[in-house]
Length: 589
Ligand SMILES: Nc1ccn([C@@H]2O[C@H](COP(=O)(O)O)[C@@H](O)[C@H]2O)c(=O)n1
Image (cartoon, rainbow, N blue to C red; front, side, top):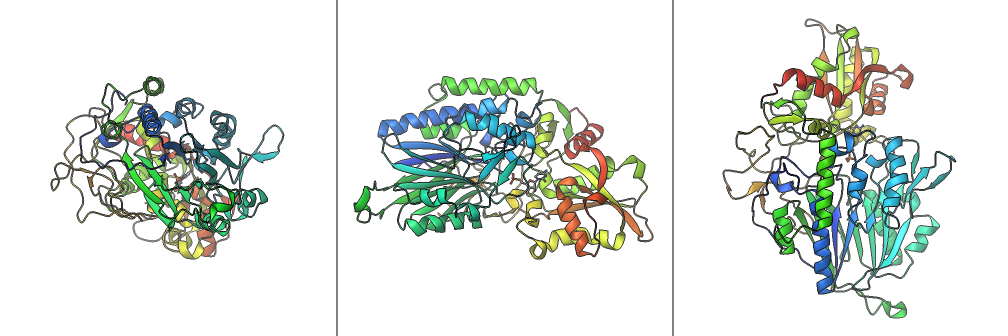
C-alpha cells in the first residue's frame, strides 16, 4: 500500500470458495492504482493486488486448480495518477501491465479521446499481447486510414492445471460516444458475423464472455442466446462492467455473470466447480449437471489479502508487487498529487445525501461553484440558465484537504462549457425538465438520457439503510469518509450487496450506506430579473450534453443545431472547480 494510505481495520470476513476454475476480476479501475488514500477498507494499491494474485496463483498450483485474471475495461480517467500527467497515462500503462491478466478488453473510457484510443492500440494491446480481446471494436490506423481490429476477436486456450478448454470473448456495450479513430460495432451485429458463429461452434468446456457491458443489459442477453443456440449445456461465465456496481447475475443454471464494482474498491472472485471436460461424441452424456458457481466481492485492503492468502505483513508481499507499489509512489510524487488546493469544510456526497440538500455535492456545484466561476465575464449581466450533467461528477468530496488528485477524482473530464445565445426563455426553462423527465420518451440507442447521470445510478440493488449513516467528526487534516456506525460499532459502513446469489457475496461485513437517486442534470439560474421573466436567455451547458440539449430544444419547437453553439468558457469544469476551491476554502485544514 502507499505510505500515506490509512491502515485497514479488522472486520468480520467470509472466506473465498475455491473451485476447479477460479477468477479474479477488476473493472472500472479508472486510474485508482494507488488505492483509496482516504478510505481504509479500499487502501491496497495495484502492487498489493499483484502480490495477492501471485500468492493466490501459488495456492491454486498447490491444490491443482486454476486461477485466471480478468479485467473488463475503463482503466483510465478518474484519478490524478492517470489524468494529471502529460500525456495522460504516462505512468499508469507501465504500472497496470505489471499485473499478469489472462483476459482483458476495452471500456468506453479508453475511446472518448483520440489519444486514449491510440494509446490502447499502440501500448495496451501490445502490453497484453494474446490476452487483449476486442470482439466488437476496430481501430482506424492514422498512418493508413485503414480500419483494423483493435485486437484479436477471441481467445482459445487450455488451463494449466485442470486442462479446461476455454473460449473467451471481449465485448464493449453498444457505445456511440467514441472518438472517430475507433469503430464500435453493435453487439447484435457482431454476433451475426461468421467468425463469431464459428467460435460458438467450437468444442470447449467453458465459454468466458468478458465485457464492458452491464450484466442484465440487452447486449449480454443477445450473446447468451447466441451461445445457447449452439450449446445447450456448455457452462458460460460472463464478466461485466460499466455500471460501477457489485453484481452477480444468473442467465440459466449453467451461465452466470460477475461484476466487480469500481475504482479499485472491489476485486471480484468467481469459482466454478463441476466443469466436465468434453471429448467429441460423448459430450451429451457428460453434460455439466451438478456444476456450481460461487462469487465473492473482496474489499481491496491488506487485512483481507492477508486473510485470504493465510499470510501476514512479512510473508504476503512479493518483490514484484512491492516494486510496483514503489513505482506508484514515485509517479504520485512526480505529479505532486498531494498538493493541497484548499480544505473542504465538510463531506459533500453524490448519492449518500439527498439532492437537493446542504450535504449534496450537486447542490454545492449548482448554488456555489457554477454561479461564481462558470459565468463568462463578458456576458455576466445576461440572464443565463447553466446546465451540468450529474455524471460529470464522479466521487464524493471528503472533509479536509482537497488535493490535485481529488480534482481529477471528482471530475476527470476535459469537457468545457458552451452556450446558445438568445434562446426564448419559455423554451430554455423547459430543457432541464425534459432532460430529467422525458428521457424515456425521447431516448434512442444513440441518445440515451440515462447516460447523463453517474453510472452507479443505472442499476442499484444494494439495500439502502433505513436512516442516513452517521460519521465521526474529522480531527485531522486528511479527508475523512464514514468511519463507523453507532448501531454496529464493530462494523464499518460499506457495500451490502444483494444479487442473484443472495446477500452473502461481500467478503467483509458492513453496515449499509444510504443511496439517493439524482437527476440527469442540474441547473444554475444566473442574473435572472427578480420581478419578471426574461424574453431570452443564454443557455449554457457542458459540452458532453450538447446532443441532449439540442434534442430537448427541438422538443420545445426550437430547431437549433451545432452551428448555433459557441464556446462559453475555455477552462474545463475540473479547472473551474479547482479555481473556486482555491478562492473559497482555506488551506489550513
Ligand atoms: N465527457 C464526459 C464523459 C463521460 N461523462 C459521464 O460519464 C459516464 C460514463 O461513465 P462510465 O464510467 O460508466 O463509463 C457518462 O454516461 C456520463 O455520465 C461525462 O459526464 N462527461
